[in-house]
Length: 139
Image 1 (tube, rainbow, N blue to C red):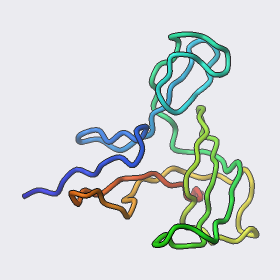
Image 2 (tube, helix red, strand yellow):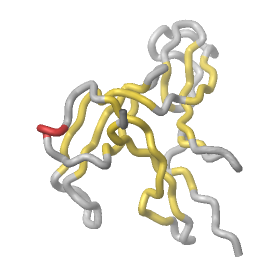
Image 3 (cartoon, helix red, strand yellow):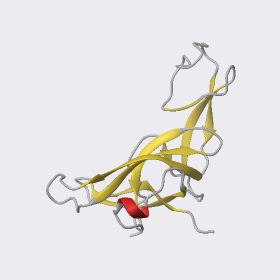
Image 4 (tube, rainbow, N blue to C red):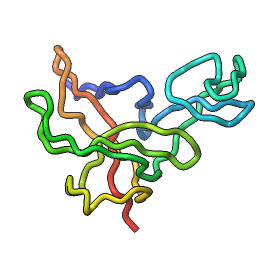
């Protein structure tokens, strides 16, 4: 019996058969704004039916963060909840990993990259979930 394919933790995380995971956004053909989630109207310029799917970049900059010290039972704290602006468009929230949860170590606009890994959770049938995270970009 072969291992089951992981499930995406969010609908904009794509796991193509035989390919690398990626995040998908929608780009407005009228104004160039990029959004997560499928939509028919651009939230920036109001253009209708002008949004097309686009693979989002894997590099970005830390826009904002919060160090979380209290969470649900079973969730290890502290962790860093981050908002990242991606190169090429798109802003999204996720956890910043592989860096100490210390404000002295975190700098706004620091370069980060998207990484994909097991989310550490399973569904009722035992299938694992794949998620995205951010980590500091190596030089």
